[in-house]
Length: 184
Image 1 (cartoon, rainbow, N blue to C red):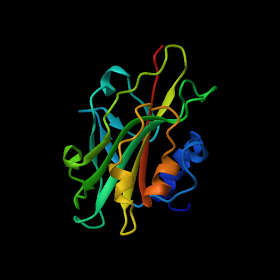
Image 2: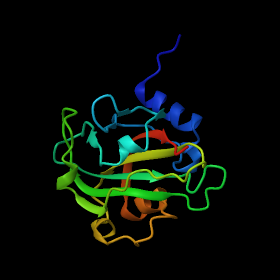
Image 3: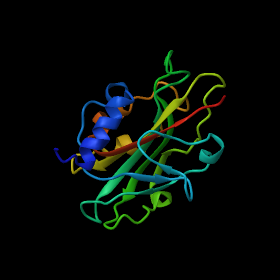
Image 4: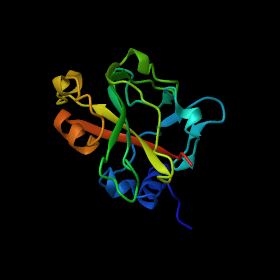
């Protein structure tokens, strides 16, 4: 039986739930992106969390290649207003740039980063079915366009495109994770 690595498992989960290709092109994870909304409320590649328990910004952990590296974190909902009719794809829930890396999976100090778009908890319309909430972690490279990361984004959150944003800013995708939430 072949050995399956964590990056293969991540990519398989992202494909299974349509995040590849809805949000991402094919990619190979370089770090495990851990997201927690408190004890026993871990984001785990497609698990379900309640809307109520995800209203406060989560704790984010990952292992950086170097503690001097800087990262950008994006949270988006590709299913706005519903997965069957995603006319507002992607709804931007959070963007934080200039997050310092940690080398030992300790929580990243996201609060010390530059908040490009403040956290907004999930709020899927009632009856719209389960929504995917996707966290994307990007490494800022030597060619990163810092002005693209510090320029305020449009106040409207719908229609955000993580692929386009990361391409314009010259960011390297290194990690992803996601959960489902639904308002019945």
